[in-house]
Amino acid sequence: MTDTLSCDLLVIGAGAGGLAAAVTAAYHGAKVIVAEKADVCGGATAWSGGWMWAPRNPLARADGVDEDIELPRTYLQHRLGKNFDAAKVDAFLTQAPRMVGFFHDKTRLQFVPGTTIADIHGGTPGAGTGHRSVAPQPIDAYKIPAPVRAKLRWQLYETSFLGMGIMAGPDLQAFLHATRSPKAFAHAAGRITRHLIDLATARKGMQLVNGTALIGRLLASADELGVDIRISSPARTLTTDDSGAVTGAQLDGPDGTVTIHAARGVILATGGFPSNVDMRKKYFPRTPTGREHWTLAPDTTTGDGIALAESAGGRLDTTLASPVAYCPVSLVPYRNGKTGVFPHILDRGKPGVIGVLASGKRFVNEADGYHDYTTAMIDAVPDGQQVRSWLVCDHRFQRLYPLGMSKPRPIPVWPYLRSGYLKTGRTLTELAQQCGIDPAQLHTTVASFNDNARRGQDPEFHRGETPFNRGSGDPDNPFPNPSLAPLEKGPFYAVKVVPGSFGTFAGIVTDASARVLDDSDTPIAGLYAVGSDQASVMGGHYPSGGINIGPAMTFGYIAARHATTATDSEEESGNTDVRDAQPAG
Figure (cartoon, helix red, strand yellow):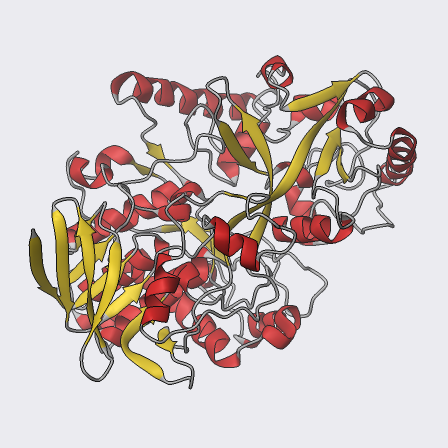
């Protein structure tokens, strides 16, 4: 059976970029259809922290921080180097504040400010010390209509506490200090109590935070604006007219083929290719079979948007500094035989943990960005050896902070030891033998690190010298630097870390309006690419947290405005706001 539908704009993919485009276009009066390959919406964004880098945003200005555009522009010029694309960077920096203002003021997607979240490379000219990031406000899932939340990808188990999401900032700090502060204990106890009630009544946590809240709020906004969201509907081919302009697509819907005619074009937002083993083998370094890499993206992110764009004359940009947005991960063995993937975002910057190679040597500032940690690991491991490292800590650290999937007290450590996820030893020598680390060198490394950490220094890698490093540490650390503490008393623990990713940087070549370009750099009429389907505006670099979602949302907003020929600002449009709607569950 073949069905035919017409719309103004077809969006292929329902992650942050695709839904941002859909909501923006619908707000400007377009009839929008979203086609999502998976049976739920959200892609990798739903499993993320939900933070987006958006310098000069209105929440920062409301807090009295009104930066000149040249400050973040200078920072990106220095960090991106030869990969700096002035036109796309300027489009991003100009439109990101407007994107945040539109969603915050006109839709169900409201934000909280990242007042103290610093850019990663604090010594670079133009680096920010806060106010450049925003995250979605938490939302009670019962405030999203039941048919809408049925399409939502729920939060990742590995990065939650028994399925309950914990938001970076005060929420997370309360959980980390629950055994040290009555106020923090009360907060954590209240959250856990509500979560247990949700599990008993709804069989899942209904307190949405982080990326799940971002997607949930976008879905609610799309629903209120009349967007037609079709799940389990992968796009197989694009349709074009005699001039080569893209006019729609054919979908494989649950009930058969659906042909979509899109008068204003198609926006590709399928999430890049992090789960495509053959493409990983071809494009990722140190990945000879494609299976040496563990992505946090859903298994549906196999490069569909790349293939569709190429079929219409687009091309994949492989000139970026890195094809992939790396994250160090550990593999979590479950009793049912499955393997989970845990991203090491939080633990590496806490005082009292170091990263070492099989040689027993440190190789990086552990408290820098996750992309930096992984690229340093790949570069440091000799050719022919498995790319891996170990995060090593002592008993004090393990009881105060998470070590990967392992949680601090009062959560017991024995399940992680029994499964083999954590290795342990009464001494550093025993631990080294368990992990296959050179024991003599590990002793030397720890002794040197400890001597400097007690003084709050790290002369080898300068850990703890930037606002980003110190913000990743613990302000209650008894040693001089919030990111440094010695590893002193056993038992000692270690978790093996391997290369993983949040998604891909390599994507389709586009212009500053997110239009797909052909081999002669001419825009292909009616075709846009956003999110990870678009070559990253960051040029394969990772200058700050949130540089995947921030550009995805911004270029989704840009593409939708271009496709709908919107010329007025959302404040001037006179359209109805949907932010105050409170639908029943």
